[in-house]
Length: 108
Image (cartoon, rainbow, N blue to C red; front, side):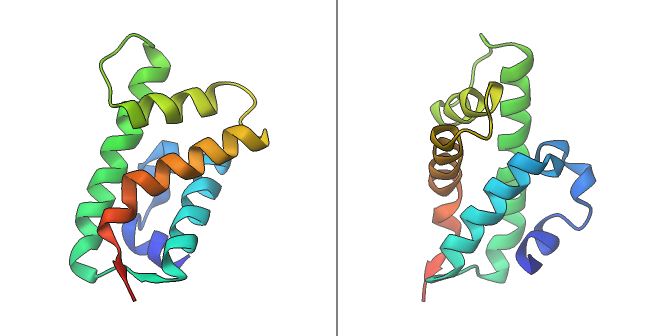
């Protein structure tokens, strides 16, 4: 939880991560990575920026499904459109977030 608080001191500033399902997905992804990785302090700001940009791209896709976006953003957007609490959609969100953020973490 401390990592997320450092990344987003005011989670309300990033509406996507303030949403319960999205926050939970982010929390679990970061928690899984931290079990055997460290997040260097120097990586916190770039990670926060990446997550903000990713959230904006997902939001843009939800508003306009034909918008240009990365494959990861498209996969994440599809996973939250309908039935966001279905296991398969939670898994898609989790895998997408891991792929998006794992490069910022270093193995212990």
